[in-house]
Length: 204
Image (cartoon, rainbow, N blue to C red; front, side, top):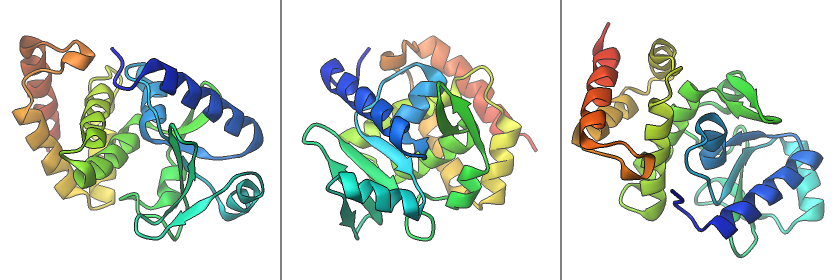
């Protein structure tokens, strides 16, 4: 099931592929989640770059600085490219730590699923109640439902970066969610999965 229109997601992914050919970056956000889960495609593109790459991108694109959200942006009219930088952007985690916890997926450098979930939780906490917040929730669930998700690593990272509040909010989200139709998760299946996850999260 598509969350965004397929035409837009296809254009976004082609654009993302072209960016990969020209620039080095860490891909975060919905497209990074998709590369791990193959669940829901994204629309906007979220990347972490260093300052020389940002300078190079400014030579080819109309890159605007968003002071309020502490990021840079490229607006295409159908989707945005959000650009984050160390010592400037607030992603909830230190950008150097994100870069140290990456893996390769289909030619892209992306955060591992555990640190990506923490990034998604941070984004969701700031966007709850919006359409983007709803997509964040679906991305959170698609990551958390991965059979290979390492809950011990997740707990270690949450503790290391003092993200206790994010973890508690995640538990509350799990408790209140009865089903996730976009991911074909029925009431019965959700009850079973969230019981298992909460037990792992609360286990010392």
